[in-house]
Length: 215
Image (cartoon, rainbow, N blue to C red; front, side, top):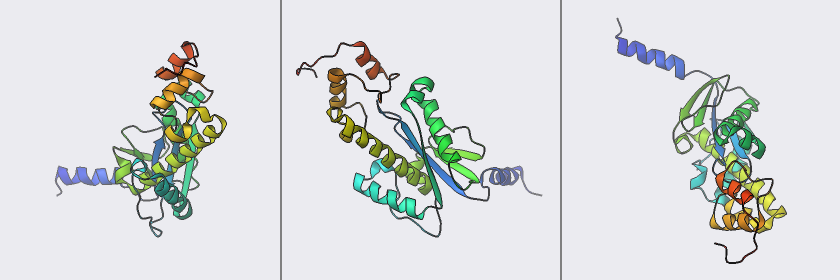
């Protein structure tokens, strides 16, 4: 007769290691002051391995771009979704991130048997899911999702830069750098800025100024 220890191990295997396709999910853009939060879901093809997958933040922009194209070409399927600035302000950034992740999974052409999500929280899903801390550095499909999400979001911010070059979105991608904070003080927030974030809220309440001595 098997011990309780082995029975529990078998039960855990039955619960978590289900047959079927595995999808990795990650997001980009929780911290910036502007732009949407973007999420991606990726189901990799074991028959078409992709070398060099890693946490997107650890890769150079050129390497991310090349991997982006390779992931799009080789993955069984992938999906990219976002939550808008308006949704971020209405829901808060955490709930908007969960919404973007949920949309990314729902957008997959193939239904996964299990979803692996980077971090320690799970969006509401109708499939088995597991949160994995530092998953973008540990799980190839999550690494792939992190790359798709970041490249997509960076491209959106570069498009925003073309419309509003005075903010420098092509360099800071919406994060609260000194350059970005100065632009907020001088020019005020755009529609693309997250008004629920404190630096943007402060800029909305402060008089605009063109004083070159601003920090």
